[in-house]
Image (cartoon, rainbow, N blue to C red):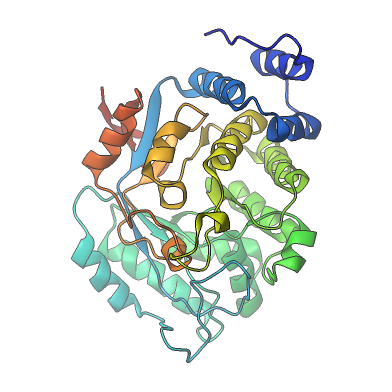
Length: 367
């Protein structure tokens, strides 16, 4: 594939040469790509990089979202999901209640439970361990993808255990992988400004480092589109890239567009389609040691997700039955899609749909 470049755009030519020769992009390169008006060339470069890594295969999983509790001690400015203890709408489900919900929506194709929730100080660490154990005993064939690095740091505080001890207990109960959340933007300025009074940047990274050392492969996210600077977005990616150099434990990077507090918020309260596509493409080019970049249809919608497959994305996430966190914050997308809809979405972009498990082992290929 050849890209026709404007001969006067020397910097884009230099970046294209670096991408093609396998040279790592710098923060300065990333800043240029965020500021260039040439979105199509950026997309073509990211598409080229993705095709070299994954060919035309695009991945999805049959998964189900579960939520143990929405009670949370943190006060993150962007969150509409959390409730305070005793507040209307607050809940903490027993393991039996979670299993009952899962049984209601489960079918034999479901391969993953995607579990996130609040940092609830009113229940002990054993509650979180026992919830995982009960689910795994009832659904032994389903991978438990649960808890963010911020939740692991919280469990460490309430239990007095080290990150390693917390993770080992959860793994013994059936934990298969960590979710990528809790990262938001890995900048202390951002975390202070947005009241992210949970794991610090270093703590978040150290939890994933520890998980990787224990043999857990994990996920990484970035919540973009609020008060962060472009430099902070890129530094976030670079810190992940450096940890990946060290451990090779991340499977996928998921850029998440921040959602407004209300579903009725106008378009000026949302990220633009250009920003979403640009961020996915830049993620693909900056994170050269990540196999996959995910286009998360819950946040950017199905049609933009389809377009993102030619801007560097190689994964569209999964069926996501009854997603709540982004929808509590005003997401306009569906709460989930069927397998057939995901296959249609991927094939409509001229790609090969591949149903996977949590660890990117191929289950079905839809040529």
